[in-house]
Amino acid sequence: MSKIGFIVQKEVRHILRDPKSLAIVVLMPLLQTLLYGYAVNLDTRNIRLAVVDRDLSEASRELADSFLHSGYFIPASAPARIGDFEEALRSGKAHAVLVMREGLSEALQSGKPYQLGLMVDGSDANRAAAVTNYSNVVVYDFVRSNPAAGASALQQARGGVRLSLQILYNPDLRSAVFFVPGIVAVILMMISALLTSITIVREKETGTMEQLMTAPVGPRQIIAGKVIPYIAVAFFDGVLVLAFGALAFDVPFRGSYLLLAFLGVVYVVAALSIGVLISTITSTQLVAMLTALLVTVLPSIMLSGFIFEIKNMPLPLRYLSAVIPARHFLEMIRGIMLKGVGLPELWHQLGALVAMTLVLFALAVKSFKVRLG
Image (cartoon, rainbow, N blue to C red; front, side):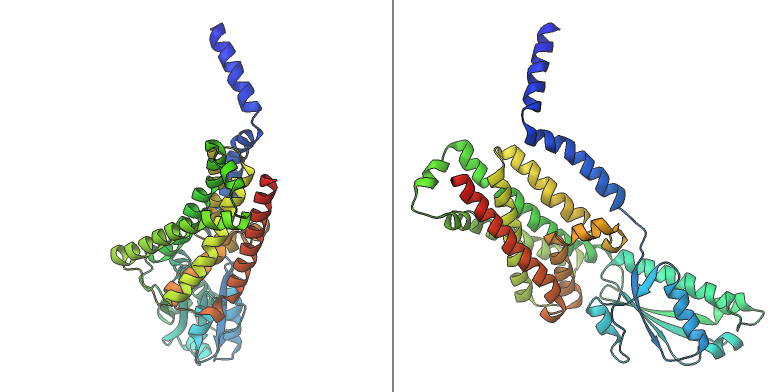
């Protein structure tokens, strides 16, 4: 037992003398607990609702207030224009559009059939289902408690004012339509960051870094030469997932292939820059891979909107998600594939992704120069 004790002491010293590995051991569970505790929120709130009021009555205004004061809906960032309701959904400025035609007040008093129009963005199946359920509850409670309704308010709530639903982009609310574009974003990040994170470290461990340093090439050329093959690998995997999703799950593609390819290049370069940056500041391949998992893959799954709504997260995590490349690419690929949007609707996300790509690539080159020095 004493011999085992000496070996245990030796291994403990090794662990304590490797601060990077120790940091991963401590930070990984803490970060996962933090993310799962705060980011995993299955309640759908802050649903952007655009209201088109053609009735212009006190009842229609009260119904609109009932939606916006329910705790589930917030006003859309831009109102829906009459005759072009879909544009608000297509641009992402609204998640749902409520249309109240003339005759709401009369229907409340008489109990005559009346249909409220509700158009829902179905590209997020979970949110669309929540919008449907919440809207039915709000309308039911409004009709039952409205003073304009007669004694048979409950019967009117069931048979009078009803919601006429129209779900766009994913009318069957299939989860695969929502998840497959997200899988592309996560896989591109995982392949690009993980594989490139071990490139320079591998040169250090095998002793070939000195050969690179004596070769007549600069840091930018070395980095470019190392990341270009992984761009091809990442694109192969992306096309593979899209093709498999289309064949196996009938996931639609309504937008431009060229636009998605261009945006994919920007995103992959950002991911590769993260991998190269990690590779220059770590000393072993194992630490590089663990760091890449911690810095890229976990946030890309938890904080990008891949599974959980960003708007349901606490404010600090929402700000943190803004600097995660996968969040912006996820919005772009879902918009292109499911809604057929173009560059005018995506320039905010593209600007953020380009800015992050330039910063990350500059940091990677600078860090590599420092290591060479």
